[in-house]
Amino acid sequence: MKKVFVTGANGLLGTNLINELLLNGYRVKGLLRDKTKYQGPAHENLELTEGNLTDNLASVLKDCDCVVHVAAVTSQSLLKYSDYSDTNYDATVHLFNLAVQCSIRKFIFVSSVNTIGHGSRINPGTEKDEIRAPFDSSFYAMSKLEAENYLLQNNHKTEVIIVNPSFMLGGYDSKPSSGKIILMFWKKSIIFYPPGGKNFVHVADVANGIISSIERGVNGERYILANENLSYREFIEKLNLQTKRNPAMIKIPGFVLTTFGYFGDVLRLFRVKTSLSSVNTKILCVNNFYSNRKSVSELKLNYQTTDTAIKDAIKYFINY
Image (cartoon, rainbow, N blue to C red):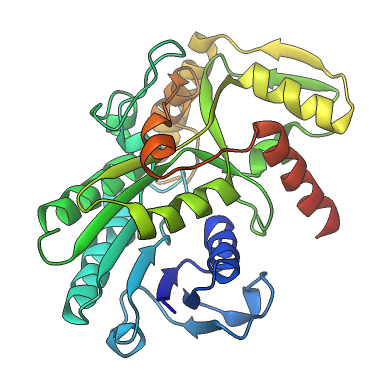
């Protein structure tokens, strides 16, 4: 039975990944800062370890076959590149070198689809496309890309596979993280929405994509784990159908969003932590669309609909 070490065990993806690994017969070691915050069910093949990414985890890794590095800083309100790179790059390099030292066979790095160039609905982005504006000005995306480049340059030391999930929705979003988009629009009588769009994917499909990459992934390859390309209006309409609501829908012009973004830039100059910035508002104005063709053909994935992802997320929020 293979043993997998998973970082970020109590996050949206980490919890779903551990559940799927256990269901597929793996033994799992999960790293998190506080065991009491783990939301997944207990299992005889699950061992939780409290610690930080910067710790010397060699004693924990020594009997593992694979590392899946999920943990990351994703907040959009941090002010400096180092606020992201300390974790997303430096800690990743530290963990990778520990994995090499411990003769780990495979290192799976969970990056972001935003390190890959987005496309249109007709011509969506693929693994071959380089990062594009405005994401090349995103501290988060660039810290993830820096880590990708380091790992791929060192994949002769141990096998490296990069997975690039799009916007994940589903159960076990306990913080919540990406599920905030549902809470933001749910139960509103008037909804103001941005002009762009993004790709949505069920978090359980991302978890299964990671498992498939352990079993089928090729050293040095990147795999987009994504599903439906939707405008924000299309996404909200799906949410409205699930919640049986009919709010008024008002589109915010791109220039209005961008103006607010520049106001956020001024606040950030005065060291005010805010997710409002020109980079973030520009991201809301683009169609951030991607193709999952490679993961379907090479990892043999079958994706669930966004409707199912929304339904599962809502069910979790209601129950917990």
